[in-house]
Amino acid sequence: MSRKKAREIALHLIFEMGFKEFQAEEVLADRLDESIMSSISGDIALYAGKLSEAQTAYIVAVVKGVASHLQELDAVIEENAHGWNMSRLSKMTVAVLRLALYEMRYVEDVPTGAAINEAVELAKTYETEEAGAFVNGILGTVSRAQEAVE
Image (tube, rainbow, N blue to C red):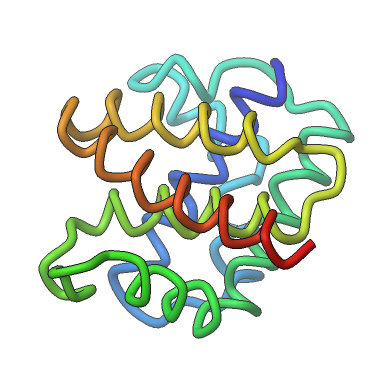
């Protein structure tokens, strides 16, 4: 399983945390348990196979990171989603944006361009082409602002 698949699993967990107040540890313990992964794998091929240590470490770090920086990430989304407030965005679009923004800011081995491209693909997969364009627009704006500061 690749980083791409680990990212997608992380997205699912971040999405799930968007429905009610879960602690990241609670979601991670429940969902990354090998028996749970195995039971889900019949319905969702993404969960088939054992996660490597690197994949598990990435998922844990990203999910915990998003949870600990949630207010900051949401503020960036609201600031850059001109004409939209968080309540109007789908929970999946918000989860994709949270994941990508966290990667762009805090995951050193993920280039900004890769974080944006992966987020756009995830938005298109789980939402629509329009959601992909929306995600691309927000993340592109954030990226340009980051480059200007650096």
